[in-house]
Image (tube, rainbow over all chains, first blue to last red; front, side, top):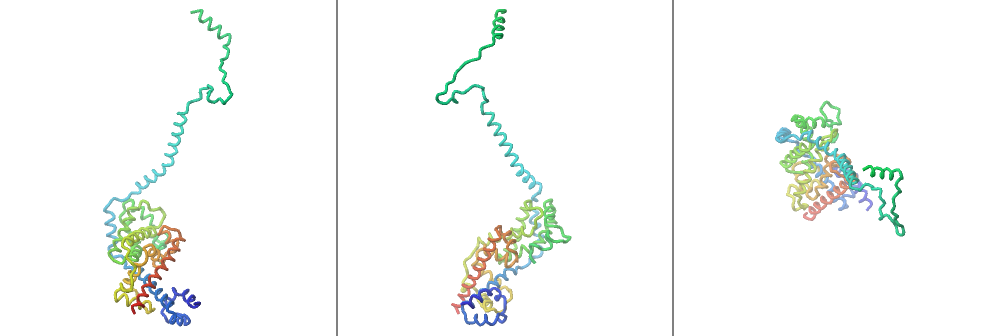
Length: 151
Length: 204
C-alpha cells in the first residue's frame, strides 16, 4: 500500500518517461500491481491527449488578408463614438446631483412659509389661547381722528 | 514561449509598434494597423482554437470570428493593455460556446476505431508514440468526456503554458478558482482515461 502511494506521487512525471527510465523499485511494483499499472497507463494517455491538443496547425497563408477584408467591409467603430459614450456616462452623476438639487428646491417651495400666527393645533391639553391686540398709540389715534375731521 | 509575454507585445522592447498604438490607428481607419495585429496574434488564436476544435474548417471559422468580434469591440479596448490576453479571452469564450453546443457523451473503448485502439494501447504501455493524426483523433475522442469548462483550463494551463493568474484573467475568474478548476480537470481526464483503458482490458 505504501509503495502504491509512493508510485502515485510520481505518476505524472513517469508518464513522460519511457518504461526503462522509471526507477527499478517502481518498475517492479508496476509489473505486479494492476491498479498502479492502470493508473500509469491512463496518465500516459492523458499526457498524449494534452500534447495532441497543442499540436494545432498554423494559420493558412492569406488568413490575415481575409480577416482584414472581412472586417473592413463594415463601418469602423470610431473612438469618437466611444469617447462620446464615456463622456455621457461620466456626466450621469452630475446630472443626478442637479436633479436632486432641483427636487429639494421644489420641495421647499411647496412648504408654506411661516405666517407668524400661532397655530392652535400646537396647543397641548390644558393650554389656552388668549386672543388680544396691542393698544394703539395715542398719537396715531389722534392723527386718524384729525385726518377724518379734515375730510 | 508564453504568448502572454511575447516580445511583439507591448511588454517587449522592439521597434515594432505597441498593441494599443495599433488599436488606436485601426480606430482611425488604418487597415494596415489591424492587419499587423492579426498577423501578430493569428498563431495564438489558431493554437487556442485548435486545442478546442478538431475540424480544420471549424478552427479557421472560430479564428476569423474571434478577430471580427475583437474588431467590433475595439473601442472598448483598454489603452495600455496588451491585445494578446484580450483576443485569447475572446477566442476561448467563442470556442467554449461552440463546444458546449455540441458536447457528446464520453467514449468507451468500443467506440474507438481499430487504429485508435492500437494507438491507445501503445501509449498506455509506454511505447514511444509521436503526435500523429491517430493521436489527435484519439485526443478528440477522449476529450469528449471532459466538460468544455475543464477543457478550457487544461488547454490554457497544460497546452498554452499560461500561469494560474493569466488563465484566471482569460476565464474571468479568481486565481484560486482557476487552480481548483485545473485540479478537477486533471482528475476528470485521468478518470476518463482509466475508464477507457478498463474497456481495453475487459475486451482483451
